Length: 458
Ligand SMILES: *Cc1c(COP(=O)(O)O)cnc(C)c1O
Image 1 (spheres, helix red, strand yellow):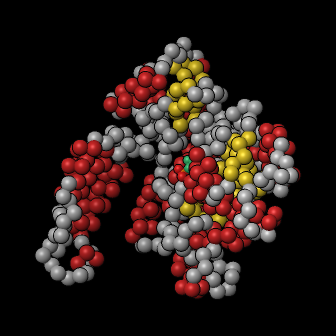
Image 2: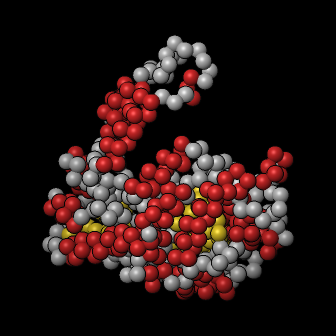
Image 3: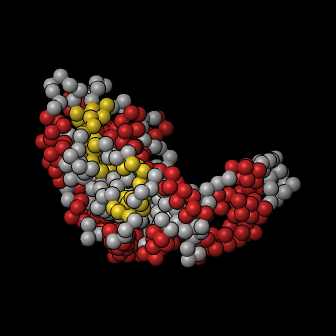
């Protein structure tokens, strides 16, 4: 770092010492057999470490990196720790993590075929592999966006506009989209952004079935706001439940509805022979959301949105600006920007692409099956326990359990105690209004003995 220099290019010069410093840090982190879970932040400590850091002259990179290492990074719960069992964890492969750094240092602009044909073609190759896993037709395609929330918003925008096109020649009249209460919060948020009313389908169990959907749609009269789409989930974030995709697909076809499948968490189950049959019907989706940063072992932040007929999405999402005309010269270029609400984008599908190409698809199948096997083993331990019980039978790799006799405060105390001892990060959830325990497994390095340590502490 060239302190005292006035050269305007001084920040852009290769700095061997800075490079070594960063590479060393990354090498240390990447070589850890198990990354530390670390802790929730203490805001006084964090704010005092950050205080006054931004200055006209800058700081020593070594000092800043040391502070990051000692204070900031310790105040971040590592989602890729095999002991992180809350929410939906993450478990990026080494190859994916390393290639993410190449994506960063090459400033890959993934907006268009014109600017990044090589990157876009590779992203599309791995998107194709995901579409094939779902049994989507050859013409299917889409793009990678920041997360499942953005993917759901992109898809539901197309669902709304296609419905208005069909019913009202495109005029902005009210339409509705059907969903169950178990749908992810981002579905409700997307509908509210889109000013689309949800039709909440009552379900006989926690799993949305074709019958539930048919019953709800039969009640929509000719004077009611028309329903133009339906969302099914595979699997639900809270319970890992996979809706009756085949049944819902049938009803969607009958009523001419856009069929969106939110497989943000569960989509990787398509790779696992032991549960693949549960997803039957997914091949009929008009659009599917799948998050590689959840159970496909890619680093944050990446979600796939795949459309059965990408031309429909392109008609809705293409941005029209004079300076962008050059992106659309022949009309058949594949521009990722045309398939969601975004222009500039990181070629964020490339870490997944590199890892899949290098590791091979068998390694992906085995890593997904590992969490499913662990789920079955832990479920068995819970069934055999006197103090614990399963709240629902697990479908994928989420377990919802109850510690008999516990109140909400006991679960909160458990969360704090387990993080204090660095045993695991486990958070309670609510199920039918009751506070209960929950595990989500996606890391193939999470072992039965790690989970046993948690169970022993309950
Ligand atoms: C996680 C999740 C989302 C949201 O995905 P983000 O990547 O967190 O935006 C949406 N739907 C389901 C079913 C999920 O599990």
